[in-house]
Image (tube, rainbow over all chains, first blue to last red; front, side, top):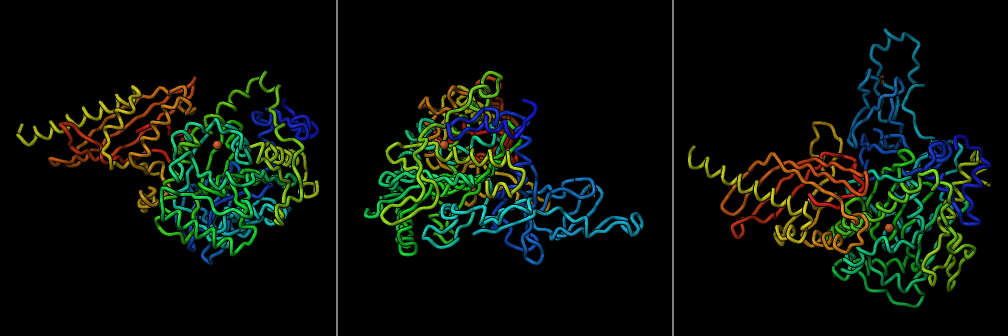
Length: 450
Length: 174
Ligand code: FES
Ligand SMILES: [Fe+2]
């Protein structure tokens, strides 16, 4: 299909019946439209405040396909700039991080302050006379930026709603990642080093997998047999999950979702981290503190999720934040940040760091198998015959409820209780419902009230 | 040739032989025998690398024991990697990849009767399923201990010459 009119999207994504066409994963034209319709308009995760603690600090990141610079200016204000010179487009920064007083373009030497202002132009007076108005030729800056509990999000679209409207009721679930384990607001930091690697599949494979795929146990059976979890069994501690209600939480009108769990109101804490008494003790004290601080909400804990379009918090252990940067229809560049409580004891941080590395990313015993599956699922969907047959997303259709309540605790979102069923595709359907709206809507006006 | 020169030549020859045999074990998928080459307290470390200004080299590598790295582990985790491959359902290595280790530029950094520091270059080629191919090139720094007329690897630092990892995973060994 060369041309795409908005009407044809209905046939491609039919979440009410539970089908999604393979075209949206492999089609070049759809990919190109995603860049305009989604990545140029949505709020995207850029980086973490702790990467740029001092004035002049910068860290290069990515928004969609484009390189950006996260920078703290000399006055301490955060900015996100397009990493491209206004003169002929040269990347003004090819370092991953550092501290600077200016960004000097290596091509003809225009230079920009850490606040983005064009400050230096070689032969300025002689070559340009009075012609060049430097105030108009600073680095291109995002339209909106938000520092939420240390996470930096930005959007290119001035008409996009505020970050908090974009986040909506999902805030409660994102907080499970960003708040301290003891329930304190914020209180997390990232461990040094960002995993960056290329995977051969469309960006939506990992985004939808993290949004709520509880169904892929067979992917990970080998690591479960070998045992890398914090108590030496399986790939993670299952005690607290096994006694909880399993909730697939989606905000279809926003596109965000998370795999969540709700402890029984009357059960004691399940044992965890049995390989490491200091760690077990730390988390037990944190849970008690969280109970005091958060009351009944203490019972809620999270798992993997996706904040539309391509940011995936993993709110429990291993506690990470992944961004799936699109790199063409058939390739994704993954960036992964690893979070810990900022004032956890050193032993706890070190224990978690080891666990994160052996679980996650290209060297992680768990995720290696995810990437194999995404790779060949994508590859086997590219053919002209394969494309004619949609994927099936029927699991758990029609079982979601609004106004979920359990012993007086109300939770926001459309929720499918999968405690008995083990899994549903409720969250994935919410993701693709929003995807279709973004692709079909001409303006944020339509997107806010679809 | 003087006696010390000859002794140094012999050590390098011994170490080269050891490294070639090690590569052979890996390429023949004799992973349990390969694990035996490590001491029980072995460290296996591969940092990530950043693009940084030439005069800030200390920022280039993620730090062992502190940062997130590609690998930063002991023999226990290495052994689990081997066990996982042997389950037959570790899909990222099932069907098994075709892997070839080339080792070169072997340099002895220091040698005592008990320990030897050695630096080398590696080229690891992986091809799997149909057309999937990775070529990973870099340096290794090993600390070898003499044991039973041969060596054990007490520490291996792997420096991959990539920043963004161009392979989808690291299911194989260096
Ligand atoms: S491209 Fe930057 S100064 Fe010309
Ligand atoms: Fe997975």
